[in-house]
Amino acid sequence: MTSSPSGHETTQPILSAQGVQRRFGGLTAVDVDDFVVRGGTITALIGPNGAGKSTFFNVLTGFDRADAGAWQLEGREVTGLPAYRLARQGMVRTFQLTRSLADLTLEENVLLAAPGQRGEGIGGALFGRRSWRRQEADNTERAQELLARFGLEQMAGQPAGVLSGGQRKLLEMARALMSEPRLLLLDEPMAGVNPRLVETLLDHIRQVRAEGTTILFVEHDMDVVADISDDVVCMAFGKVLATGTPAEVMRDPEVIDAYLGSDEAGDDDSARLAGKGRQP
Ligand SMILES: Nc1ncnc2c1ncn2[C@@H]1O[C@H](COP(=O)(O)OP(=O)(O)O)[C@@H](O)[C@H]1O
Ligand SMILES: [Mg+2]
Image (cartoon, rainbow, N blue to C red; front, top):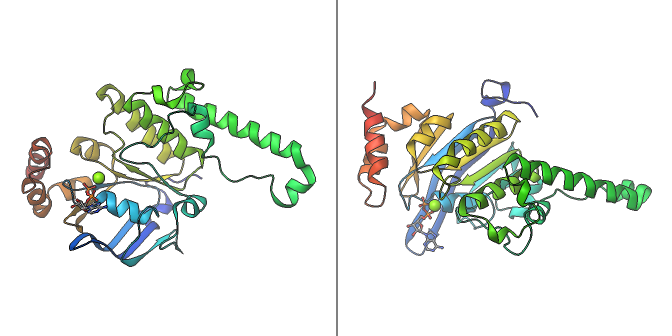
């Protein structure tokens, strides 16, 4: 797995979606005609509060159902597949509110995401317990490596419940990476993370891309988006308003309007967007 933003894979969509709709009663929360994530990129999904970003994530990742539409992962039809089957096909997500299991240790939380047993089938029959034990040791080693990567190795044996909000985000990333995803979806990975940790987390995300995993993430902070993203997609009222480089999207008048017109979007974001929009 070696792809980079400048590599061959950039022209190939890893994820495409057409005509995806999700309605809640009279509200159409998601109404996306056309959506593409290029392989090897960090792609940001932005938009004011209530734009439908999380709902779109939930639908694509099998945690919610769509009322209409189709989507493909690396060209394979994956419309409506449940999350565990998508994970097997290489698409894994984290949540805006983390879901680590508080009573399990950090290591156990990460191990839960280990990919399927290699000891199954003919190999398992031939090598039996020995292969199974070997695999368990491999998984444990990888879990420990991932925890170390996120600076959590000292706490590996402690229950996840002791972690701060920011540390839980790191644990979620470690857990998501355990299954070696081709496409990693992060819903507001920086939310609740100590500002001192944000730069570290961004470096981790860049590193994940460098290792060949494509990243699609929801983010509010425009500085973060401009800093780290190859591509940006802006949603408002369930629809895709604009797609392009961070600079292109942030100077798009419709995007600026959507942020300025939103009561809920932070004044900070509107000001930053408007500021960026004025740049040549
Ligand atoms: N389960 C639900 N039932 C009813 N309305 C919902 C539900 N989930 C989300 N919504 C509504 O759908 C819209 C989009 O929400 P959401 O996807 O969370 O937006 P975002 O993540 O962009 O802030 C909002 O108006 C929200 O209130
Ligand atoms: Mg959301």
